Image 1 (cartoon, one colour):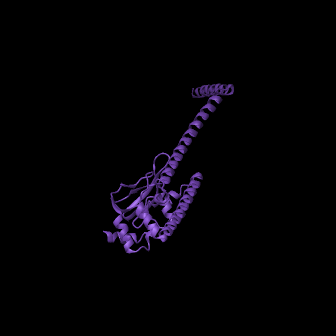
Image 2 (cartoon, rainbow, N blue to C red; image 1 turned 180 degrees about the vertical axis):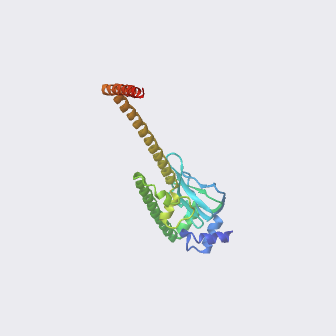
Image 3 (cartoon, rainbow, N blue to C red; image 1 turned 90 degrees about the vertical axis):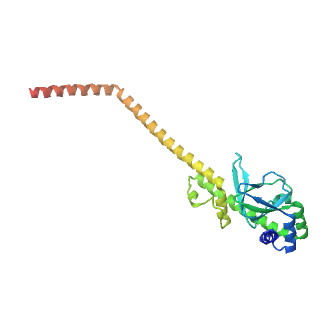
Length: 250
């Protein structure tokens, strides 16, 4: 298993270039975590005493919105490291991680990680590069959310059909951002449904108002003296015509 882990760790950006001896030491000092789908690898707010190297499987990085609903920030698979942010700034974890499928992850303690940084400054550089990529992705994520928010304000929901938020894999950062905004899609669908319900209610109300207006107009017309006189004249005319027809028949 150690050999397999070493080969996997070699693919992780922040450990690229470390010798097999150094990687062997990491695997020996690390703890292999085996998770089933739905198991939590780390939780938001807890003390970050370790980082995780994803050996196999897929995990989702999550947080919560103001209502306590889950928001997916990212998805990470084999060959990626997560949780190192808490080791660098000694703050509580900013997000949680939950297995989307059966996973294996190597847990590296703060002490082991600090030894690596002390011995290999180039690892620190790799971490900086990784955070730079995360920042670029976050920018793309925010830009996509703003663009969709503007479309919603204009009543344009075409982007829902053009995006697939639930796929596990994506190519570009732009495509990945679209897939990860599942909470945004849920909100959009609710807004769209409420808008359609409101449109139906407005149409129904407009019909009822028109009906009431027509009824009122009819009552106003039939209640005038002119209408009463016209009604009496029509009645008199019908009586005269009936008498005339009766005389002609006799």
